Length: 89
Image (cartoon, rainbow, N blue to C red; front, side, top):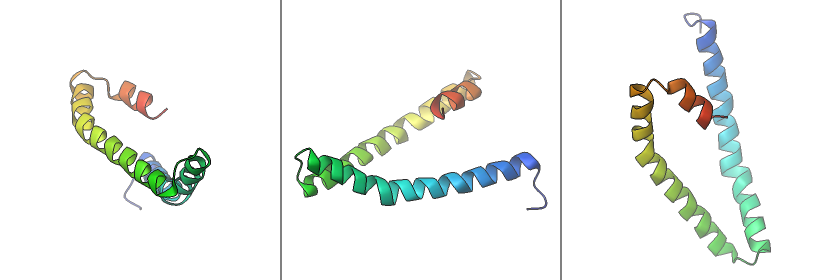
């Protein structure tokens, strides 16, 4: 890591930590929590798993559609900082 400046090193560490957090929460903790809440609400366990899969699929599809459009708008209107602040706060 000797050839990177302080800001680049900071982003690398942030990305590493964020990836680990996301991996643990999304793959290990949230599905268990979601199933518990859904089954306590009267949803069958198999259905709760299906609903979670449907929701994640729809959200991923919407992000795949909107990401390039919003990225283009941010680039051409000079709003990268505003978009970054809005989507990551």
